[in-house]
Image (cartoon, rainbow, N blue to C red; front, side, top):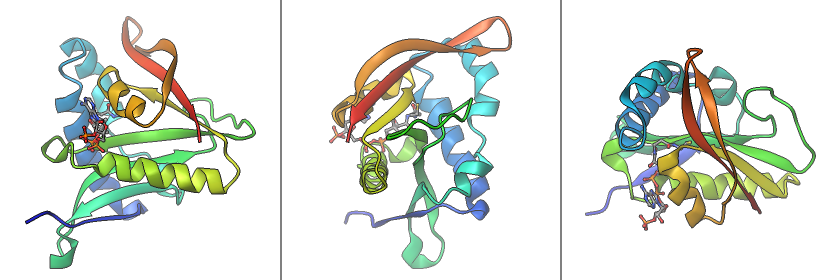
Length: 172
Ligand SMILES: CC(C)(COP(=O)(O)OP(=O)(O)OC[C@H]1O[C@@H](n2cnc3c(N)ncnc32)[C@H](O)[C@@H]1OP(=O)(O)O)[C@@H](O)C(=O)NCCC(=O)NCCS
């Protein structure tokens, strides 16, 4: 029997669950593509649920088992008009933010469901272009939904290390 998932808007109270999902996703799924020392330095900050996203109304979780009253958050992600980092807003452009699927729950269409919701809502609010900073391993996920690579970049970690990332975008 297939699992039932529920996609809903995330709230402040999901902080612990979202951090758990991001920890599993980033720790286990990024290990194949990155230097272990760089990942070890980068992950503590990268896997923390972001309060501004949880409060945004455009950040989502997928839950399993909610019909038992003990739902478990197994995927998360969302979009904002503010760019990650500097927070600038550009007319018609939105940013895909903090996607992750628990490593035990991948390839079930959970991130795809959230991305589809992001696209529909962003489009309805006048956005024509979605951008993201993808990890190396997530490039194929975003490419499957029409994103193309716009640049190769990296995040500085601890002054001496770098975490390679992929800048991608798509018209919606
Ligand atoms: C990227 C990520 C969010 C995808 O989550 P997911 O729930 O497994 O993705 P979905 O099941 O919705 O995938 C939908 C489609 O995307 C593509 N896709 C997803 N993961 C893929 C992978 N590892 N390799 C190739 N294609 C992939 C496939 O076309 C897939 O459809 P299919 O399973 O029918 O072939 C997840 O792998 C993850 O958390 N990775 C680590 C953290 C990360 O890099 N997050 C992105 C922020 S930068």
